[in-house]
Image 1 (tube, one colour):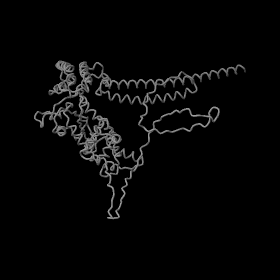
Image 2: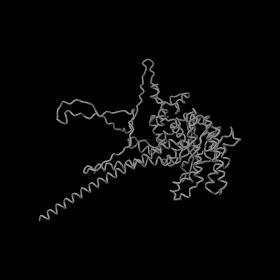
Image 3: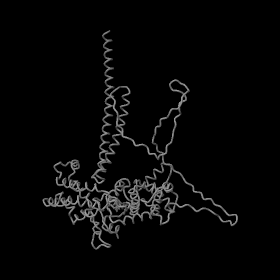
Image 4: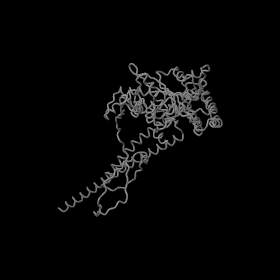
Length: 541
């Protein structure tokens, strides 16, 4: 009997020890998962920081770097969320078991902005000592914990009252005049109008989605009602758009580019085009403010840039699209436009043949990488390195630096490319990339930057202006009509120009819509993004 009791006790002890080991193993596993998740998040965070620093060092034009950073930020979101979940799970498990702890390196949070209002919530203080119960307690200080909170959008109706008075003597009625409204059918305030416009054209939220969100917030605004106000705002903002267009076309040098836009057509959609012409004199220290002018067209025909730039003469920085060729004719009225081609486009053709990672994703062997294309990328990158060092200098300083530093590299690249091409078949992909730079005397347009310090090495300014359109295509799917495309180009001109001048587009549109009806024609230039100041700043001044 005693043997059975001792055996049962031994088994119970073994079971308890086994359970303890299982709990410890489970706790260690949870801790390990938390450490691994935290380490992955930390590695991804550091890689993201390195990518951002490299982008700042090498410029925004680096190949695929912008998309890579967006992808890394999305991955970091998931890893941070997973790390937090694993950390909480580990804390729950370790309440019963003691294991070696770890300290998670959390991302540093920036302090809350000082301009945000502070709402002070005071927790009721104790009336007696929590230890001995005595009432003899005195306040010695306080601890403040700040929590960021957001107040849901608040709708309100503003009632503007105009009192009437009658004269006892002449019996005439006196009443103050009605206030100006941003649009002819002035039922919407300027802040609401700016919200509708910026959500549609700046955040790429179609009006039907906006109407659904407003309805959920208790305000029923139909799609046709919102569309009516968009058209009215476009008409009201026409003076601002005209001044921006005149400012852009007053430049001696422009960046030009275009992108596809689906246009609703019978039985489906057709491919239309959105064009942009950007004035940006900041790379050579020019004093003119930057601005962008957009146009919409049903096709990519040569007649479109001819119409957009009719009467303009200067330097056009663009790709090698043949639709611009009419602008370069010697007999053009008022004169030929000078072509300055983009080195990023030329480099990209070599880069695609030398992209080891890209070819590996396509299943190609490393041996398929062209050493000539790799060498061409390295030579072109050396020219880009010089450009980064002279960015923002004056035109004369840039030209002098290019003459001394860039010209020898460009001439050596020219001789080397021609020598390599002569040894290749014309069907070789590398030969096609080389011919892109030499066909139709393009080399003169590629090297025009050496003799003019105002010219940029790339056309990235125009590509940046079109970036929002490329992102928005997935949201709004297509332009509903040609008039709708023209209206989108109109609003993109305003919003992109505001962004280029570091102005909040929504705040600027709201203030302009409020002030424009009562502004004389001579004071309209004060409302342009580079001249604009907020109402609070004007009052303070």
